[in-house]
Image (tube, rainbow over all chains, first blue to last red; front, side, top):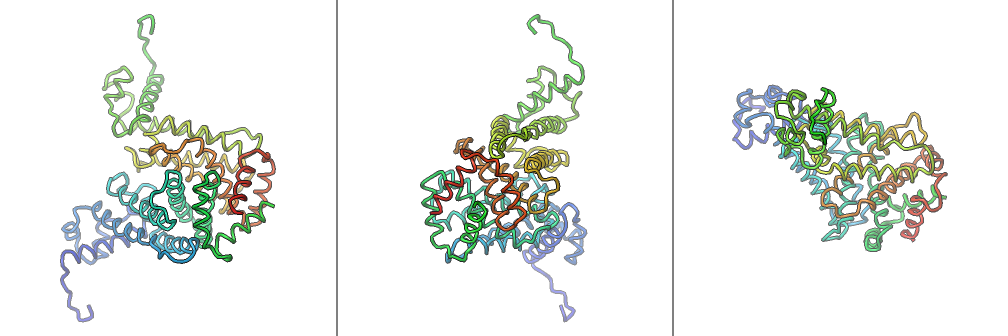
Length: 229
Length: 229
């Protein structure tokens, strides 16, 4: 660029550049408010050229959402080392980083964006939920989760989603507080389920065996005992 | 009807009848799969006559959704008497009755129904969430809920929604189990929030003061203490 020579991009390179530019715009404002003209202008190309690569705004939106979904799903991947609470807390940090970076786009998507109801959009949102679910189940060391455990994990994934959405609406609570709260919520939902079932209780004891005395779970239990007394 | 005389209905009566017939059909199958022909046939009138009362399927769907939303919001109304846990458990019973009766329509709406993204549909879904939120806050005896308490209550409302949706997907767990589980989940989310804040801890102690020794909260705490030991 500094030489003043404008290199011509290849097709795939141009597509990837447009996806990046569109994702940036779709993240910062509700996708409904972003026009193809604006995307063209931000990418430094003409409107017809955008249409050359993407037949319409929906297909560009879906491509941007695909990139964002892959990114978000990757954030649930965590090395299988150390206490579970600390692992989940790191995941929550990366999750809120994502929500922080893509706020308006994330909120619009979850509350009914331009492509909502499209099977592609629904499938992408579901793929992130599924990835999160599978990561958690594998960290719990379970290969074939029974229905009740599946329900606990999936309902927590949905709780994380709605907590993030509520946070975006005004950001009235520091996100760090919600990250640790969601880790605690996970433990609580799992404990409630385990309280009525011996198999889940055994799983829970095994999973929490590695928790350190200064970890988030131990801290919570200490505080809850103080609260109950 | 037994006299063989077919009474002519007034406009509003016919509209209400059509809404009832449509809601019944939209509840039992995904609304996408229900045709105007089918609604006309179930109501015993011609297709053009349906269009006389409703300009299209979307407006009939929205009218049916309005009736269902009002019904669901009403189920959160509970007399201000007796322990909180028992009140919430009765609400959960009525909530799952509704979900049970309107399964496919409820799932389709929440996962992207025919009118999803329409501002009317979103507003109706939000009105139910808001009604549930306001009822719970008022039962807690709080008039101006701080942000963190609001977040706890709203995220629990969303947890109840996703738990019901997960239950509908195969009904692999008895609903009674989930009704009590959601009551416990509410107590746990509130307790976690209270564990880190004196004001919420005081509110929680006040709210739980009326809990009987054989109520759902006491039972849970006993079981959790056993689990932790």
